[in-house]
Length: 517
Image (cartoon, rainbow, N blue to C red; front, side, top):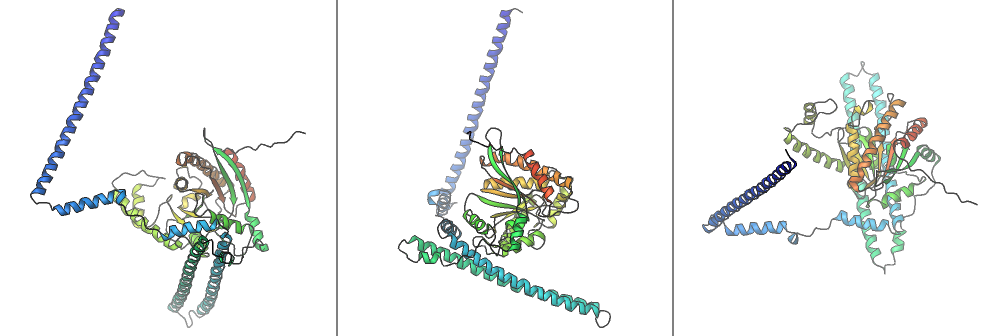
């Protein structure tokens, strides 16, 4: 075949392909126009039938016009009802304005006075319960000595039942009293804050200075020797500044802290170093875009009856929350949402699920059906607080006994739960988050040095990956991540973990400038 014939064949093939594409486009346009015309004809037929029913009286014209008017008013913004002012929102704005004014010291002193009064009431409760338990223990010892002589097993059970009932009556009595006291405190506090704000709006009011100074300061910086020793023991920490990202780098602050997880929640009844500053910082950022969060590892039951949940509930009751509902009320809402969510997911059982950690989906569904109020490992619920020392939000992350084993991977539900928590932090202005580095709050015998190093390396690497994802979630906002290790960990182990962190994260190098003479 000559060159000219090849050229002719190529040109013909190109023309044929172009012609074919043109014909295809024309055919497509024709089908689209035909489909559109048929759709319009269907609409016309339905409209004619509707008009025919209207003219024959099959449809009530008044009912039709009312339905149209209601639909139009509900779907257009110009007819929407203005939002009614909320007491919580109004109080939040008033408090945020006052805490950033000269009245901040007065607010903190008043809150501390309320905290002291509640702490004294709790001390009285604990003392009365202790006396009751001691009295019951003495009585039970006497009954056990007479067992087999003048007492039978039924008598012992009856005495034990009486003791249990007496404890329940006493605990309920104190619980009701504490609930009443905190309710009164919250009402008085909110009314006083609103009144103070109204008085400060009047520049001619001469009693403002007296109102601001009405509460004497009790937040002294002097501390008892025992409290100071405790603070020094807790203050074992290392801080790092890192940069993450390939092109657009974001600076973050990392801290490795050895402390008890509840130390971030407890208020000190007696003043200690930094107590007033921590209270002020927490109050200033309560209604801001710089919230502080804490990850608390819990079991699968949404309550506060045992373990770390009971200890946390005890701490939250020591100080009245003037802004958010009590912890029990928040947990009740979580339980209701949980039941609703489980009822919705049960409607989609036909959808296939991927097995996880060797457990079949059938076993997983059976466990959920047994108690739909329980949560699964990796799931978490959130509680809001204004009465904790350094925390505004607590993420209650569900974990199981598998976190104590040494063979977990990056797909572990607890690890994926941390990823979801960090995503919530990005979308809800939580810029400071405290994470249990070892995914446990207490050390045990199986947690050897190699176990701790492997677990810390896994969590460090996973959190680093999650933090790099943050740039796509929030645009690259600087955050502070605190890695928390249990209080009982040794100093040697702590510093080994501290040396590991710069090897995984890209730590900023310092530059020392000296002047030439």
